[in-house]
Image (cartoon, rainbow, N blue to C red):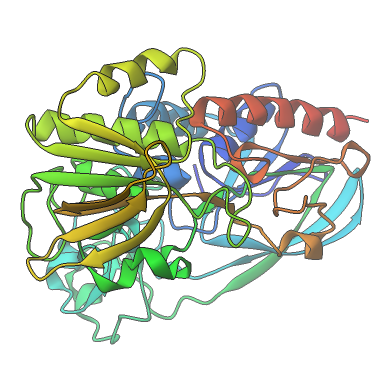
Length: 419
């Protein structure tokens, strides 16, 4: 099914990244008869989409679309999946690449049934990266309840190797001595679907991310609203768990700024409006303030925006936030200049949500593999090299467009592999 399949013969396509774009590209290629290697650096597939509460256009949970793709992968013998695996080197030429892959040890083998006896026995804890550190897991953990493969992993930075998990496991699934592996695959073409990272909010010192737990990022808000998140889906202020009566959304946090990300990250305005719908569903009378440069809600999403602009408890303020001041009661004051009136605005709120931009995950690193990047770090497809980019590795886009670019990348990869 995954990880342990025998390798195919020479040829085929390597898909780097197991998010929605990589899944789509791998499935599109495999379902027309092409052998595919799918590698993902995390212990699970699904990428950033797996961390969302809902996504456009239907505002459905990620488990909806991802589960369908996982079932397709299980049934397709042409796809070999390698989690906790990254590209170490690329040699050769288009049509005949030799790619060396490095797999980190999971310390849990394929005998794992997900019974959870190991976590009950484990005495160690770690910060939960899937929830952006807002809660903890045991040192042996399953990334989230819908993770695929449905297998646990051990964070050795948190593990004392006490052996209690080994004693608790009835299936001999835990191997504390498991070692890293390197192996080489021969492929004709490569699809880079390496996704994106949220821009580091600590780099914007005026927004004071480290100075108050009331200041969170848009991805942290997704996890707070998610039923499998740190609060079971209840939007509460981290730290004191207060129900917020007022929330500020700070747009373009890092985006459209020559000192940070000079481009528009495309999805931030829609993401904030979506998150306002989360707030409104839980707190019908909460006051919401949106500080923005421009509101970008293309096409059919204009009506989605109009609904919130008509809400009497939502105030839209055209102006870039200059400062966020932590307050003694746990809240913050957002400071901005209203670009329409010229007035200085100081708005006290219980929470502030930074709409941090998208930064390509391979920024600065792709050149080592012969991959061309634009000035912002996005990967440029190169048909002559039989390398294609997909999803947010290609540009800042939404989930639907990611799937579209992945289908296009798969077609290019298939063509290259059959020359």
